[in-house]
Image (cartoon, rainbow, N blue to C red; front, side, top):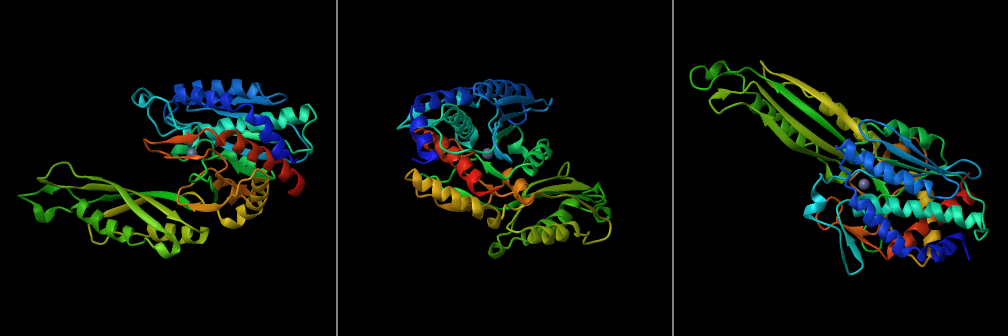
Length: 388
Ligand SMILES: [Zn+2]
């Protein structure tokens, strides 16, 4: 038996316990912008981390939202497992949409993205700790660090440095974000993600008496909106979306101010640079206007060349568990984008099987939890054998 198989057999005895932990985790609401809730969740996670034999669990405090680091000792350079416990759901969502079970699926806000992945990672750590401790594991393994942050859904601005610091010391990064589809496909590339705020200033005037003296900022912004949208290039995998526009005060005033919030996605770092320089180079199209562009690339692309070696190992370990693992790409970013950009091999989508991230039908396939935890644990051991 391989370690993954041993772990699966052992973890299958914890299926009910894992489901109960997930229920608890979903029961502690944790929106990205509510520090008190995030701290409550971090306390829960810290307790769970302390229950892992031999692990060192620490709270990394931050008034705006803490992180939790759970480290299991081992040999050589560590494997970093990344998770986040913030969700996109505001407080009160749980009252409106309580946890429910249906056909072996657990529905609840934040269950799939990504509290189930976090619970699976905790149990993977337990398997790595216990099976080694009682001699049933058959391989030495690297140290494992589980880093769980609380601002992923809002761009990881606070935690980015922490994530990068841990990644630089690690031989590989495994991201416990949700897998894709009922077969639980892994994420082998992700687009880079960025945004801009484009602000136009013109000149206010009475819309009746002095129309010709005004400089209509909305009109000027509209021209730039058209230009921005036109930067979309599906063939290159580039999308630009003007998602929010604001401007003006009332209909009888020529508006002196308008602004647009823009999201963009790119498949390669080069395309990111090209797009950023194009947008930063936008200039007023007529006299009397000023234009200010802020923002840029937030998450660099997670390129397939960075995931390939780990994906091959995951397919191997998956086969030992009877799983035919496939990979696919995603237009959304994750913290794996940061770590891959540092040159650290990274694989994403190693979390929950289910569906409905950021949607009302969000749910997790409970039966897959022990198996996916075993996949993660087995992958750690395999990385220890193959990847120095
Ligand atoms: Zn997520």
